[in-house]
Image 1: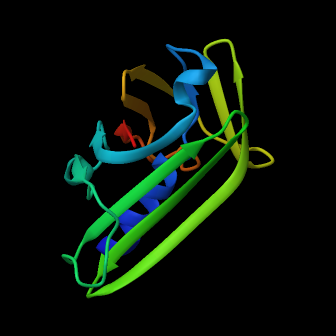
Image 2: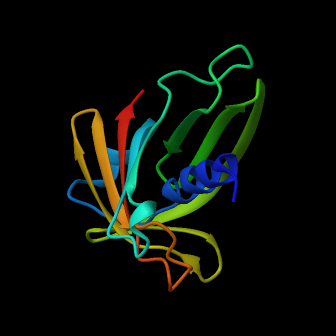
Length: 152
């Protein structure tokens, strides 16, 4: 699979994780930018590693392999936009209006009926950490994905 596709899938999946909250509903409301994604405990050791995201949206004039993702939570919905620049062409992928719920310490985001994932989150000031399976729909994927965000 090409690096472009892998980065896009990773950004998309990381932005759709379900989290157990150490904070309140209000802690996650706002817009966040992915800083890094770290893959650990993968069956294939070569899949372990870290991806660093751009701090500004990608442009055609910018560096190749640029990936920038914003994630937004309202009081009841979730959305994300990912920009990627490969070979001086910028691709954009967005989703919006995806409902989420919080029940006790769990935040649940379901992109479709019976298509939900699970993980944990912590918020400290303007930083958020999300931890969960990289691809919960794949029983053979054991990678743990830790995504670091900053509020923008």
